[in-house]
Image 1 (cartoon, chains in turn purple, orange):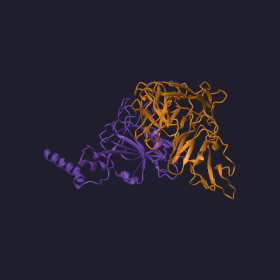
Image 2: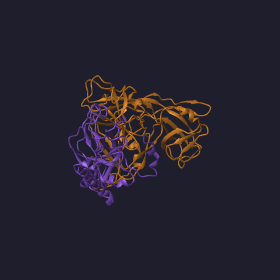
Image 3: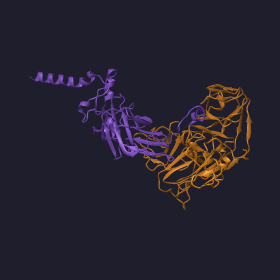
Image 4: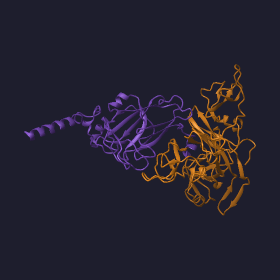
Length: 226
Length: 355
């Protein structure tokens, strides 16, 4: 219901929501899907989110810097409507009438783990279109063949959210996660990632700590063997 | 063809009044309309009917969250499971509407601040809001194409406007064991939750997305000789007064509300929308009316005449020059493309119509 709009518009400026993009990572019937797992192959929990938008600077996004993200509509929590881990589904709406900045941009899915430490960025070959009068699109990481992963995207272990083993795709650590560590520790094994994220907005201690720790353990092992 | 066509059948024209000791409830005209949809596309339609009046009377005052009628019995009259909508029916703000729930016997909680809009003695009515089950049948008696065990790839999907976009509702015709999905109305994002009570606000149009390339000869509303057209019958009460609808920047999908033919000229819409200046529609609001072929005819109101090429003041089509478009019929649902910031548009009853 749009009851809130009936009167509030007298006093406020608003924009109609028309363009709608459906996004998910599973088949609505069989529920076969491409499960989203973290870098430790744990399926993302129901506090994790998926959202639609685009990056003004995809190179930065690929390096783990998500500051150029332009979000489209509302994010969806994981669960797929059933409280299942590893899957999500949502509808994002916003106006793309006139000269919207979204028009022509690649429809991109940004997935954020519940801890806010790991991310997956999936870019579709589909682009945002202009409302004329209603632009619609569907992006499904499971069934679409035109997905490019800008961040994360390494194949994970088989995952079972209740419908048998499904293929999975991994999120990856980002610089954002590292900057959060002063207040919240989230295990994130970025040393295993094929393309480690760029380290930004962090102290020298946090930047160097993993390498220092790794060096310490290597020396410890060597010492114990000798 | 997908132009919404309708037949209004008033089953009860008489306005019956029943009085209790505390409040009056009037029975509005009721009836049904038939909307037509086409396959393989999006159909913009509206029922042009509402739920029945649950309460009516006169307010003595309103503050930011409630409105008061000392003679009302809201806790009784609004005790159903429905959502309710309150509309002012007299005074300076006739047609203003907002959500309503009973706050006490004599006070109703309002979805918007009515304190500056209500004067002592202004009359109102509160109606229940129609739901998806009201419109299409709790068991899908309209026979929209259902999903099979949650597979919506061939299902008809009803797009209902909400505060942030759309709630997409479908009928799941075959249950699924896991994840559990029962037979009934569902949304595309809320799993097995019952969506039959999804509210369709009376000023909103809906989209019916038909993914099939043709209808079946044996389904409701389809003539076997024409599998490209399907009629859907909506029943409800007639709104007997003008209504205020919101038109925000961008595309607004509007319910005509009046359940009968109404022309652009009769709509009076030109009083509320942005007009073209000597044919320049850059900043003018456009009215999009489905043309029956999957496209739209676009109209505007030219507010300033132009000598050459000659263009008079009045309703014009965007492709038909100076031809008078005032007699063009507004479909049951239409679009206002609002170029400027939001405004309120009055959806009137045609002149001379008194329900």
